[in-house]
Image 1: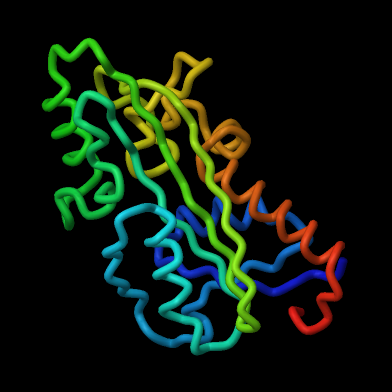
Image 2: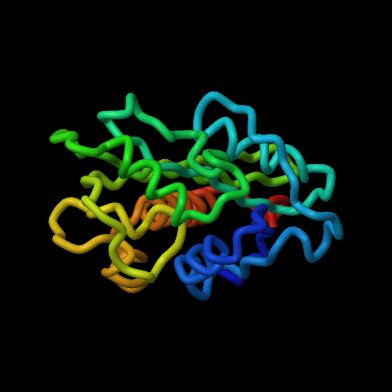
Length: 204
């Protein structure tokens, strides 16, 4: 299959790097800002990660180009799933170090430290094709911030099967097991299936 250009709706450079690495040679992932010209400032008011991802692509559907977007977050069982869909907006404007310190403070002396990262990824084509996939990685919250790799809440999340946080494990491991990796691997698999089993000339 020839390389397809898809525009990614995000202003997060770390996220863009991860998704580009997952795309491989089949997909040419471009920032939507390269053709939109505007700052990406979207009101993510959906009730789920999937709804927020759909809101992102809907915002730019007027460009009439293939789009991908995702929404993701950290759910902590002892906090009732918080911060969840509010993960990025929690203590908005404050550095993630402070956000993590606040979450650890709320979990002080808490024995149940089960948590998970969730990601919903969406592909949109101006002909009306919409594909979606979800990725989840289960784990626990560390007792302290550990590691400086990755971004967001990575330094306090220990994925099941490991003793180190995402912040300590590094990008290679994270790219193979993370919620975003799982979601986009599934999404790209759906795209391959779609383009191999359908007369898709109109969708290119």
